[in-house]
Amino acid sequence: AVVSTQSTGMHTSKNEKPTTIYVGSIPEGTESTDIIRHFGIYGNIVNINFNSKPVVKTPNKKTMAFAYVVYDNAQSAEAAVQNCNHSKLSGQEIRVMIYEPEFKEKGRNIWVKNLPSVCDNRMLAACFGAIGQVKSAKVSKDASGQSKGYGFVQFVKKSDAKKVIKLGSALKMGQNELLVQEYESREEQAPTAQVFTNLFFKDFPLDRAQEIEQKLINIGPITSFYMPTLIKDDGSIVLKGFGFANF
Image (cartoon, rainbow, N blue to C red):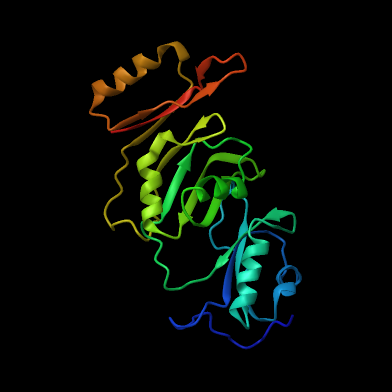
């Protein structure tokens, strides 16, 4: 495969199938030659736009890069997505999808909480893929690579995202009851002053759960109250020791 030094456009007309793929969650230290080796076997690469050093970095977030890989035909791009999504590049699981500049994300994204610690991107995609076609799935991880217990899913159809949100806490992954809500990026949110109504609480006495809920209700009306539970080996159900409330 050859990487062109010329600027090759990533946009296609509405009548043409896309030839560009998006590669996300690329670990720090990956080189463009690694990307060529990984994706070059599926067709001739005419251009790579590789952002190896993301602008936003925080001490508690593992640095991830991303890239756009342009093939000379749509079949190669589709083959790369089919074979490389959730594969490992430089030891890290990556996300691969067709790049569609006309694709509107609004209304297609959900935020999933209370994921099992063993859940990875592939498991998250498989879980919600049973409900609708998933375009992308990502489990949020800390700097050590451990799951933070939540993730994001993007559906191809808005109707599938709405269907999942309506199901709400009826969804389970293993023994975990999932908490699902619509996700909006900062770009999609209205340009108004930030007002937070969600509350996260933890480290409370497990035998005083009802008292906690009542104390919150005394403060103001609550639209939702959720305490994740865990089924022990003996079949008993216990609280995990944290919860969410929305005023």
